[in-house]
Image (cartoon, rainbow, N blue to C red; front, side, top):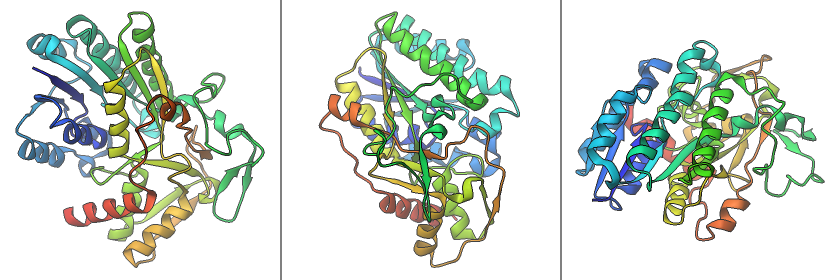
Length: 353
């Protein structure tokens, strides 16, 4: 039997992976205990998405396990063993603001939980492909010291810089920088996944995501930029921009396109490889530009205000360079642009309200 195991299976990327892999594996095992509700409140609950997966996919089996507890994971790994061919680890505490409130919880989920998943895979399914969703926050605020210029609606990197054409590559330093506690816990996990590939020879891939987005995101004020922004645009709820005049730039990758990157890696895996994964020059926007799109799609002016206080360790300009991944996997490319993604988010939120 061919089995794919997905942590955070009711979240944005996990649920997209369940859908994408459902016709490619005999069984999809989902591990998700809805800690997103604990992190961000009832509006962030992923229970609706878990229910959707269980109703839609007959070969999906859900486990309410906690990745911080080895004993809970061991039961699952012992039951399925080497039938597990792919482990897709998307479960995380994803907010750098929230991490400062409960550092022990953040680190235990992001770092210890990743170590637990790696060790269970090594002991019980050593030939499985292990795919990890890291983050661009591993680079800390180093991108803020690039030569940036201010335009009417965004910050942009100087056209003479090597990063101008394609964005920030994987050689950008992750050292001597302020990460936020979330960034630090994800650095620990990122390096662990690399090490299990390089030291133990496991097939591990690390994907440093930009803004991951899509219609199945349970966006909140502390996490889920485009999803939460569109929710405010539809409902009329107030939105707060934190710092940088609203001109901070993010690249945005649709959950389908990211999971398709995972699939290409699974088909031809490497050991301890690191890839930046975002919208790149194909799909990026500033806060002000995103607000303008949301207003156009909803036909309503948004209610928003500006705070001079930026989030600690936040990026002023971040665009991912995917040249390395595209050179290794030339059959992959983006499918969904920014406007298409936002339209899907709009329609998804509207259907649930």
